[in-house]
Length: 296
Image (cartoon, rainbow, N blue to C red; front, side, top):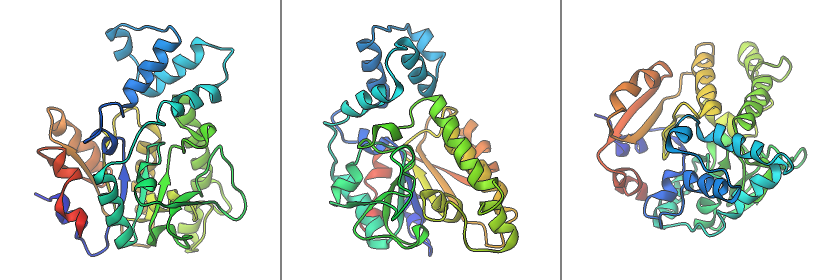
């Protein structure tokens, strides 16, 4: 069976796609998105039973919270969510994992809004020379220097937004659908589209200087979140990645999903296999965040 050490040691080192598990592991048990949403729910007086809460994904729950107070705009609720994360701190494994990526000059994409990974290595934020928007800062990143090629250099990219730009936070299902709509136009939208680039053999597309280029063209290891059914945007991106790899002149890049073994692991393997993602399980979370290979 493939181990995380094996994955991190392949000839072309993988990019990292990291979820909130990196904050929960070894943290003070306050770094949970579920808990933050529950806190927002209490503040708004929207108390749900366990059965009512189970009916909704986290993304739908956020939209329901937003609808509970129609006079408050979405950005204020996003800002309140970000304020609840201000006390979050990076830990040793943030620094260790970011250090591996920095030494090997590999990109990190995180679905987290906090800046713990960047703070652990005292990284600076960089914006595109033109075209910056705080609503979709897809070309902005944290690094130790300006990146020329996202596929082949170290940076921390935030796929779902940055807490310093509350309007960028993608929390609700409406937000995810907006991201899909934007990315889809870049992938299929004619001139400067990704599909057009692959068809014509060109080397440029609209997402070339964003984390999307890493998703589509790098080997990548995914860990720290369930990649469940509510991850609409990312699941769609990996479906598109699998489709586009069939027409790409470049060899397909490998991908791995790593999780702690649980009762649903066996039933989840087929979905990942069809995406071209190898499903890897470990016995304990420490086998992910404290693996000695991160020090290599």
